Image: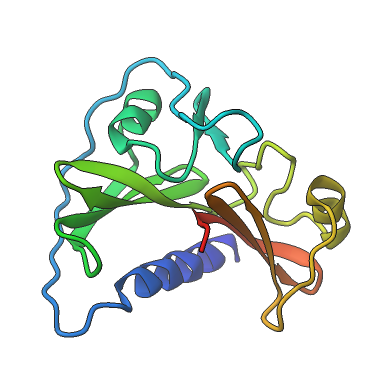
Length: 179
């Protein structure tokens, strides 16, 4: 069940990121990400100014430079890239155990564009995880009106944290740029 759910979320995320493309060319490369070094704090955002995800001893935030994130996390389990629909360059996807990071290009650098939690082996710093209840999310983040599709959206600084519920249980958590 977890593998089917993971596959579904990854497919939806990839489809959504490529949905803006119409008639554009895409490509893939299976080269590994650079080897990492010791974990470091990568987020330039002040504490409590935005939502961050923590992994490998690093705080990772939307708009962080991906080179710094790779230095902290090390090589991804898998890597995918395709021509960007919205930017000049390549959109890149790095899959780690329990989460996926996608990037957007800006000049010669890549920046974190989304972080998708893929299973219950990781949690947000506030304590939300896939499989927790609506009551646990509310205790961690406060009240939010779910949309008709069951999405709770919390925005802080330049980040929106989308928590998707199914039958009042968290099915997906994603960090995205605030609109």
